[in-house]
Structure formats: structure tokens, C-alpha cells
Image 1 (spheres, rainbow, N blue to C red):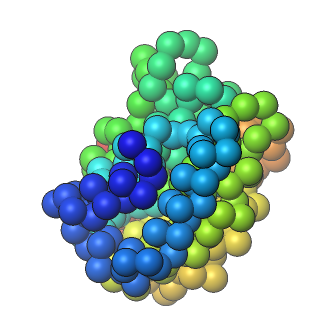
Image 2 (cartoon, rainbow, N blue to C red):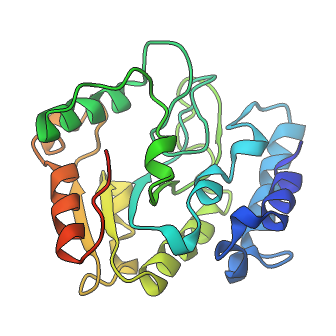
Length: 232
């Protein structure tokens, strides 16, 4: 399956409710152009992650009208077999990606919960946590992180973030790292909560991610707004 066919299948499914009405998903618009660029990458011989049927997984699992929190990543894991279409999520054998290990460490310190037995964050997405990378694809391989940031995904995900901020009443935006924090101007902070910190990667987690207590902070704010807390 190509990215373009995966996009068409996503837009034709009930799981795209809310998202399909955004201008970036109109025929020939930014999402279609980004997918065409991804397909050209594959034709040129590059291995692209995630698999086409998982490119829009974050949107499929968390419809627009269900979003209560959003965690923004930069782009999918470039390590072969790691990316599954949800930011920071991983489905596969140990070891877990190191950023996810650090997310679980902070979760344990913040909430007193033991680390889950796997890296699949689908359970968060199903509760209204939009696990969105700012680029939805990447070339697989060492040193390939960021390789698809210039393929047009930025315009797609900017509109997604802006739509959440415009159309949802109370959302917690967790912006981990400098690339995610560039999206802050898209968010109306009089309605939404922004929790910004360092990225959970081993290179930066000790510079402000550890000790930031994002999970308890998010839940406390959601409850103040009359929303159910998230079972992190």
C-alpha cells in the first residue's frame, strides 16, 4: 500500500470523523502532497516508517471530538521496526526506545506506577490523548531522524493542532522538546493548558523532563475543568 492509498482509506473510514473536514485533507491539498512525496521516497528506494497503514494511526484512534490531551513528538522512530504511527509508542520486543523508557521513569516518579510491560501507547490514544508527530513519516535507519520534516507534513500537523485548539474546549498540550514548543503559538492558552519541558530523550531528559510531573499536572487541570482524568 502507498501513503496516498492509505490516506484515501483513512478519509473514507468512520475513524476520520472531524479530521476529514479540515482543509489540509481536501483533494490535492497538503496531506495529499505530503503523501505523494513519501511515495516518491519509496520509489527512490528508501525504506519509510511507519508502514503506510499506520501513518494516520494517531488520528484514527483519537477523533477530533474526543481529544482531551495532545503529546507532540518530532517524527517517528527511525530505528527499523520501532515506529507505529503514535508518537513515542512502540510495539515490539525489548528493549524499549530510550525516550519511552524515560517517559515511563517520569510516570513512575510522578504517579507511583510501575512501568508497563510493553511500549504500546494505544491505551492513551483511546482515552483521548492525541499522540501526534509533527512529521508523520521518516526514512528508516541510523541518523535519519528528521529526514521527512521538509516533505510538507508540518502544514498538515499545524492545521491539526490549530483545529484541536480552536474546536475543543479544554485540552492539555504536552510539548516535549524545542521542536514541539514551536507549535505553542497555535494554542490559545486562555482555554488550554500547555505543559512544556525538555524532550525525554537520553540527551535532554535530565535538563527538565525528569521532575516535570506532567501526568499529575495534566490530570489535576482536567479535573478542574470538569473532565475525567486520564489513566496514564
